[in-house]
Each structure stands twice: as C-alpha cells, then as structure tokens.
Length: 235
Length: 79
Image (cartoon, rainbow over all chains, first blue to last red; front, side, top):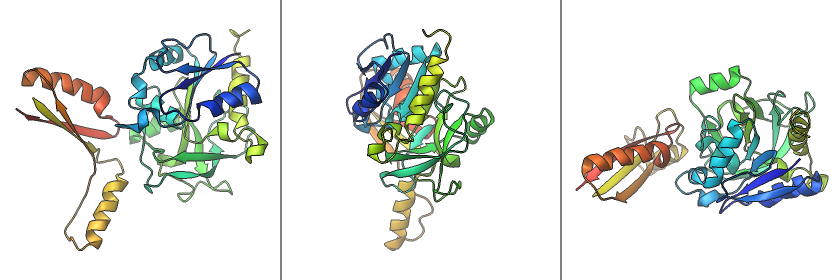
C-alpha cells in the first residue's frame, strides 16, 4: 500500500501527514508537488492542511486549479480514496469534489484547540474502524471552517448519510456551544455520495500518537488503511 | 478597459464581518443601519470590446473569482 500527500505552496501539515503514514503506520508515502500531473501509483491521496496560495481570494480557490488537482479528480472519479484535512477539505469543496463551502468562523476568530467529534456515520472508508459510540478528541486549527451549504444540499447530505463527523461537547452532546465555527448542523466532516472522497476540518494527523496528547486520529487513518486492505483489487 | 468585479456573500450566508461592523456602527452612534454585508472588490484591466470582455469575465467569475455556493457577483464596466 502506498500513499501520496499533496504539497502546495503554503501547505504546512504535509510533513505531519507523511510522518503519520510513513513512521507511525509504516507505509511508503511520498509528497506530491502541486505541479505534478499524476498521482502515480498511490492507493490513496491526502490533501493536507495549511494555507495554500496564502488563502488568497478564497481558501482553496487557487489550489483547485493546480495540475495535481486534475489528477486527483481523475483518481477520485475512478473510485480512488481521497481525504482532505482542513485546507484539504476547503480545496475539495472548491474543486466541486465535495458539496458546500467553508466560510469564515462565526466568531471571526482563528480557533486552535481540541474538540470532540461524534462519528455521524461509520459507513465510510474514513470511519469504518472507529468503535460504535466512541467520540474522538482531535484538534482543530482554522479561521475558515464554518461549513455552509444550502438547505437542499444539507438535506441530501443527511439523507445519504454523508455527514461523517459533528462537533459535540465533552459529554457527547450536540450543542451550539460545542460548535467552534458556526458550521451548519455542527458538521466537522463529510464525504461525497460515492463515499470515496472525504473532508474534515479537524486534524487527525496531529492526534495519532499518545505522546502528542491523544491518538484518536489514528482511527481515521486505520479506517482508510483497512478499507484499502479489503479492496479486492489491491494485492 | 477597466472592469470592477464586486463580490458579496449570498443573503442566506452568515456574514459575521458584516454583523460585527454593523454592531460597531451602532455603538458609535450611527443609527438607522439595517444591514451591512462585506464582500470583495477586484479591479481588472483587460483588452477587448465590452461584449467579449463580459462573456469572458463572467465565465471566469463563475468558476473562479466567486464561489456560487456562497457568493454573488456583478461586473461594472468603465471605458
């Protein structure tokens, strides 16, 4: 199993993501510069956090037109697994690979803290290995993580079980106070209808080793790895 | 030709910057403000006749300069 982690000018969580895949899980992982036209032999692609192109114009709006995103779209259209984290989520929304958009936090503040996530759907390659009933404690670090979509899109997300994570409080209650950015329906992560493209604002790569104060994020990487292992086409 | 692209958040989209500025205006004694929306303003210099420029810029505004999920835009032409 091999992984690719995209790298744009302004990405800053790319090395963290590589570290988790390469050193924590032990899989060959390579950084893929934004000017590449192919994702090569990668079995899954990670779009990391950061501030691609300085967040100019809108977050993710310029990165989505980079050559590598053409390759990612083709990879995703063919069923390849793609996970966008933070800025990666913003890029996937801009690229139209995920519905909706991430706008300025309701508070106008950059929020950098640990949050609790309820797993809204276990039926995805990104959440399949998370034990039922377990809420995840994972950090966020964003100024524009306020998930917005229109009513129709929200209904279709809920109806198709595409909401993966919601912000909850430490007791696991879905409250407005637990919502760090004003996201609709406390949404912290979603997947597409085909369930092979996921996006989330929290950073699982920053919570994959106990030494960092928690390793709940491992469960997301482990879910993806297990999903790939169970794919009949993969040796 | 100079074209101004004026981008505003859609009505249904929360605009926390606009709300904060509205509150600040009220606190400063500027009464009667019923709404504030904060958007973006882009100036583009471009060659070509108005129709061609309008067709081309609308295309790029739709796919790049504005995000139709959250923003509206209008083009203002200056000869």
